[in-house]
Amino acid sequence: MNKNPQTPLVFCTILLLLKSLHANSHSHSHTVCIIGSGIGGASVAHFLRRYSDPQTIGQITIFERHGVVGGRMATVTIAGETFESGASILHPKNYHALNYTKYLNLRVKQPKHADDSLSLGIWDGHKFVYKTLNSSSKLPIVQRFVAIANSIVMLLRYGVFSLLRMSSFVEATVNKFLRYYEGFESRPVFESVEGMLKWAGLYNLTTRTLGEELVNVGLSPILIQELVTVITRINYGQSVNISGLAGAVSLAGSGGGLWSVEGGNWQMAAGLINRSEVVLHLHEEIESISYLGDVYELNSTKGKSYNCQVAVVATPLDELNILFNPAISLPPRKLQHTHATFVRGLLNPAYFGLGSLSDIPELVGTTETADVPFSSISILKEHEKDMTYKIFSREPLADALLDVIFSVRVETIKINWAAYPHYQAPETYAPFILDGNHLYYVNAFENAASTMETSAVAAENIARLILSRLSQQVYYSSTNLKSFSSDSSRLHVEL
Ligand SMILES: Cc1cc2nc3c(=O)[nH]c(=O)nc-3n(C[C@H](O)[C@H](O)[C@H](O)COP(=O)(O)OP(=O)(O)OC[C@H]3O[C@@H](n4cnc5c(N)ncnc54)[C@H](O)[C@@H]3O)c2cc1C
Ligand SMILES: *[C@@H]1O[C@H](CO)[C@@H](O)[C@H](O)[C@H]1NC(C)=O
Ligand SMILES: *[C@@H]1O[C@H](CO)[C@@H](O)[C@H](O)[C@H]1NC(C)=O
Ligand SMILES: *[C@@H]1O[C@H](CO)[C@@H](O)[C@H](O)[C@H]1NC(C)=O
Ligand SMILES: *[C@@H]1O[C@H](CO)[C@@H](O)[C@H](O)[C@H]1NC(C)=O
Ligand SMILES: *[C@@H]1O[C@H](CO)[C@@H](O)[C@H](O)[C@H]1NC(C)=O
Ligand SMILES: CC(=O)N[C@H]1CO[C@H](CO)[C@@H](O)[C@@H]1O
Image (tube, rainbow, N blue to C red; front, side, top):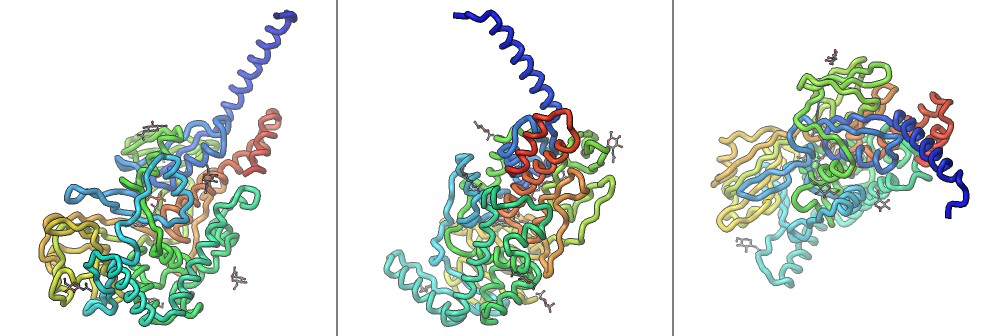
């Protein structure tokens, strides 16, 4: 068969050539350190792997100060059952989260209530200014009738046109956001949050407050003061003084088709990290990041030191003491703290001036007033004799106060979240590239809106930004590696 004796030799030469090429390119693969294992950090790792090869991106290391991954996606166990304690709901058009769920074989969980069957009351500290009827009937026809009656009450109070204008404002904003899922041909790599928002037509919404924006589009003042305020207080713990964009995102999170991941949203981060060939360091807090000329040196509180060519900050820096060398400068930003209190027990109807427990709506929202110590109370689960509730508040709830609001309290768990930015209008933004080199900041995007999906969208852009800037660097700095650099510039064009 082997008529040409030279074939084995040629074959060997090719093998050697391939091997040396491989070794060469490997010496040019870049190491990446990511600080934070929330959906932002996990998404950066995922998209770096998806958009590049091992010749470009070598080892990826994620540092997490806590013993679990997921960050603000976390669960709490009360009365033997597990609930989301941080980020809980996803929108039907959160396409990265949907893709993650599919890719990781996780299951979608629908909320226990169809949207029109959840009873809602708006509490102003003295009375319910608005309350849906409670239908205890199991007959579908009765439920349907109650739902219609509730719709009529709502339309009468808030105005048909105001409600329609509100929903078209939200829809228009969601549609603009969908541009971030466009392909690489039409979607550029963004070097700044402003650029990213302007491209999608969302920037102006961050220059005015939600209140101003909604008055502008013609909403009735009562709709803004009641229903809209209830929603921004639940989702961001803040008033309608948040930016129009954060407000639209908040309102979108009160519509239909909402979902979560069965067993906990944190599994998205866990799964992405598991599948992205990441070296994960749990219980390891980074306390300093120093640029040494060609690498970043990350020191941890364990006294260890790690070198990486690319460093990604995937956590809000506002309440951290990471030492940057050289120093970086960020616009001031405060985080809104949300206290999530989980109670197994029974609410006290007398607190709400009501005669019986079943008169208390399943979701109690609140207006913007100093007279209410909480933002919302909702029923997570009805047990045989009592319930599990979730309360959001801006300040911690003292036990003495809880004993006034509840007539029975068997178990209480309190969590203080540094939850999301305290929004303002006009917003200012930290840069995505913190030092002009390869130090990146995913959570600069949180001033636009803070959600699991926006973190994923920002992270996807950061992954593209890293690859695009690395390929430019290689292109300009290595003239001797022709094939590699031309490959990289092609990568740049594709990205
Ligand atoms: C109560 C609450 C309710 C919310 N509800 C929703 C909701 O319904 N839907 C929604 O989409 N979003 C919601 N959000 C917002 C959502 O949780 C966040 O936008 C999102 O999870 C942020 O993800 P991240 O990866 O950017 O940051 P994080 O999840 O905060 O991850 C950062 C990680 O970095 C770690 N870290 C910090 N410093 C260091 C260090 N020096 N060294 C090592 N590790 C470090 C932290 O421990 C953390 O794990 C809610 C948030 C809260 C608090
Ligand atoms: C979701 O996954 C599909 C299939 O892998 C892919 O075609 C699509 O672009 C992904 N969507 C997003 C938003 O990444
Ligand atoms: C945003 O506002 C500027 C200045 O008011 C205006 O010129 C521009 O057209 C607006 N852009 C959008 C998308 O509305
Ligand atoms: C909202 O902003 C207005 C104007 O700055 C201010 O008067 C009002 O007190 C703010 N409301 C809240 C609840 O912060
Ligand atoms: C990690 O992913 C693999 C599949 O790639 C799976 O078999 C394994 O169970 C996963 N491990 C965890 C802890 O999720
Ligand atoms: C980080 O650790 C290294 C090695 O221990 C040390 O030389 C360096 O000074 C440390 N950097 C900072 C900023 O503390
Ligand atoms: C409409 C409706 O079903 N209302 C009920 C709400 O709950 C109270 C207390 O159980 C009942 O008395 C009402 O009839």
